[in-house]
Length: 170
Image (cartoon, rainbow, N blue to C red; front, side, top):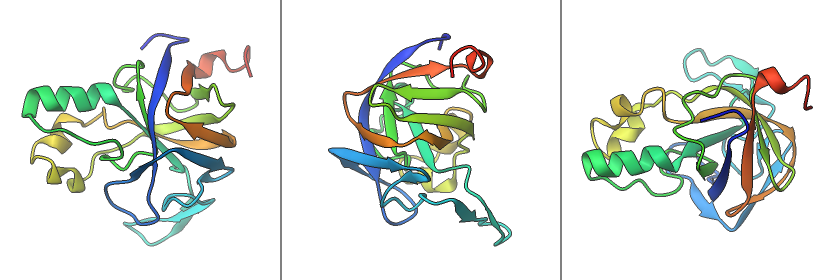
């Protein structure tokens, strides 16, 4: 992925329950704390390890179709949109492994997300194949917080604004 890269939203997904999958929708409303109606939406989350209440830095998750395509080629498994429990499935930005905390994802609809980190694969992904978590480590996509709420739908475009450019382009 290069600075200023542009991709396309292939699917927007949500699920009121945790786990996988999330389910494709025609459109989702992104509120100030995530995709409205989604399990991961909220200002706070509870740590699965400690039970402690923490600020939610995982309000929205974004995955890349390029990773799904590679898994189909390598393992012969097809991952459906929402299959990695992502809210947004994009294409054209590579595998998202080079996105860093502070980078922005600016959508044509006006929604802006700030990347907070890479999304670590969990054992739930073995439902597709036992090797999936290992093969997608560092490439499961990113998690983000909402900077500008709005609506998202398939067909929207998305641009990466590197953190280093934020002072120049708010």
